[in-house]
Length: 204
Ligand code: GRF
Image 1 (tube, rainbow, N blue to C red):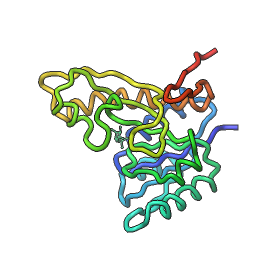
Image 2: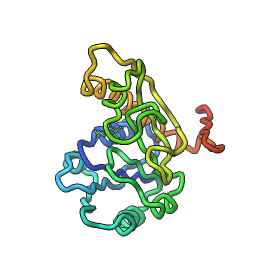
Image 3: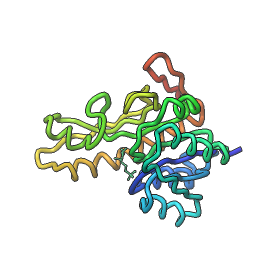
């Protein structure tokens, strides 16, 4: 049976599209995207999902208490039999309730080499700090922001003439590649977690 993925997003949705492409092309085998959920009305990612014939829901978060909101989202995911949750530009911290319900089955992509530059505008933070290399990270989600065990990272060189936008664009290409790779590893169960370390076993 195809493993059911749920995507949570708040905006553009390019990582969602990269995952949908990887599922459609078989780079993520035996999987389907069961639902895309946005906390924001008008998130472009929602329209992109509908255009692909994927169910897309808006569950507005505005004015809701964190756990009450997460209970609504978890209920929607459970109703659809979602086994793996992928955060793809979802601009909210998850409650301990959500993390517990899907322990080690929630992934996030972040546009820096964590633990450097967690939080917002990671590419701008990297430029302002003056690092020569940045990149992106796919990690399991725990109760802290951008902090769970790391599954995949990719390195991107910072150029002298980079702006936050040009750096973000080069990082984004790597995000799309490693997010699909990480989802495949997790769905195939080809990893074990020891403390903070994730050991990936090779494909047969
Ligand atoms: C990406 O840079 C991702 O790393 C970060 O938010 C951005 C979302 O972009 N978490 P998109 O909506 O997937 O295009």
